[in-house]
Length: 314
Figure 1 (tube, rainbow, N blue to C red):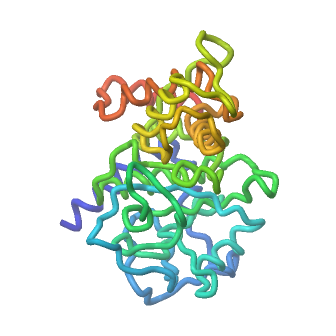
Figure 2 (figure 1 turned 60 degrees about the vertical axis):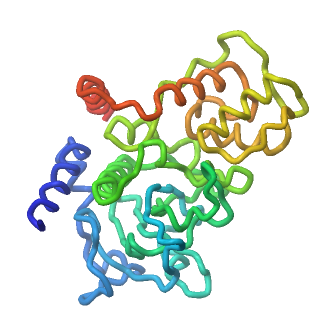
Figure 3 (figure 1 turned 120 degrees about the vertical axis):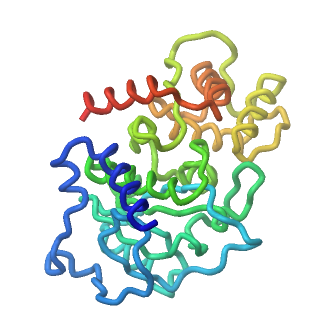
C-alpha cells in the first residue's frame, strides 16, 4: 500500500513539475538557519500526509469535522499579510483562532499544520451549494501573498507548481469534484477577495485541478448589461444560474449589493480580465458554459492539449 501511495504522489508531481528545475526549486528543503520562523520538529505530532510537504508544524487551532463529514472541497486563500513568516505564526497561535491544513511559501515550500481528517478554521462565515459549515467539508490551503492591501504581487511559478502538486495529491486521497476547488471569495463574496484575480486558475486546470472554461470575450455580444438597481427576469435568470453553480444568493429579480458581490467574486475566479460586478454578456456567457461543462469528463486529447499549452507558457 505504501509503495502504491508513493508512486501516485510521484506521478502527480511529474505531471505538474514538467520542468526539472522548477520541481527542484519548488520542493528544495532549505536549512533551518535560512528560515528561523519555521520550526523543524524531529518528532512531529503527526506524519506529513503529502509527499510534497517539507515540514509539519502543528497548530492547536482545529477540531472534529461536524456531522461525520469528510472533505469534498479544497478552499484556496492568500495570507493577506506583509510577510509569510508573520502569517504562519498567526495560523499557529492559539490566540488567533484561525488555521489551515497547509501553508505554501513563495518559494514552493509547503508546511502542514492540520491533518486532513480534522476541521481547520479557515473559511469563517461562508456558503456553497447549500453548505454553511465550509470548514467541516473542506481542506484549506493558505498561499503566501500579501494580498490587495499590500501591493498584491504576482504568484511565483514555483509557488503555483507546489500548490498544484499539493492539490493533486489531496484529490487522490479524497473525492473532490473539479468544481469544488474554490476561492475563499467564492464562498464568502461579501467579505473576501482572495486569492484574487491574479491567481492562475487556468494553469491549475490545465494540470488537472479545478474547473475552468475559456472566458467569453469582453466587449462583445448582445443582451442587457445588468448592474446595481436593475430589476426583472434577466436579473432573476442570472441569479438562478449563479445559485445553480453554488453561490449563495436569493433569486429576487433585483440586482442588489449581494448580487453585485457574487458577480464580482465570479469574475475574480472565472473572468479576471475585467472585475466590475456588472452582469455583462461576457460574464453571463462564461457562467452558462461553466454550467454546461461541469461534470463532463475531460478527454485524453483535451488533457494533452492543456498540458501542451502549459508547457508553452512556462
